[in-house]
Length: 239
Ligand SMILES: [Zn+2]
Image (cartoon, rainbow, N blue to C red; front, side, top):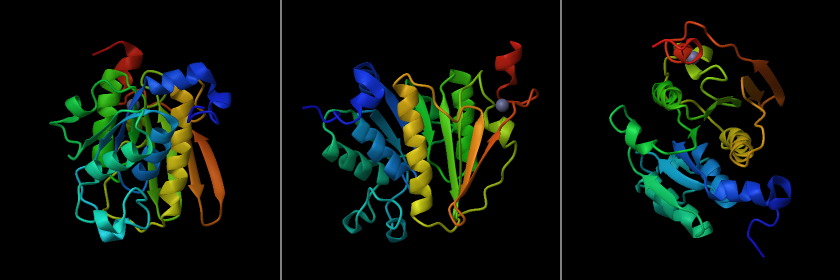
């Protein structure tokens, strides 16, 4: 019996092999990154887990990788321990550093897909630039209160994050229920599994937004900015 018996009928033996040969970076190990790491690790995906923060008490209602005993410890190292405890067949590397201009080339190198589980646009724009310049797809996920938004970015094919959100200023911590990041993480994880297993993801070039207070979901097509400072060169062949 394989631990993947219940998902192989959906993605195929070949899809499972592809998952087991893939490496995904999860940037941010908070409310979105915790369930993302659990689901993707459980599905058999190799993981690089990036976060420079320590676990704190007011994280626990949504950051389900951690317990009270972990308060004060580096999230990336606790996350690595917790994912390895659940699946010893995959490779998991925790990197207890924030993503910066200085380390982005090292910590995101060689990955097949980048999952944005951060809480700020400064880091997202950094991921976007790396994604576009190295042609690595990435999934943008964000939450605020009861709201979430998500899109699947494939450089050279879909709009990039700068096309969609040209200049968002970060406002600092927002209120959040634990279930909102769990919702968007689940959607990001299934998009990632589909993509890595060779199936077509559903959110390429589409921004899915949800309001969990009213349970209204909206999907809009997003447009490329032909003058985008980050990705326009992929489409024009220019510098
Ligand atoms: Zn762009």
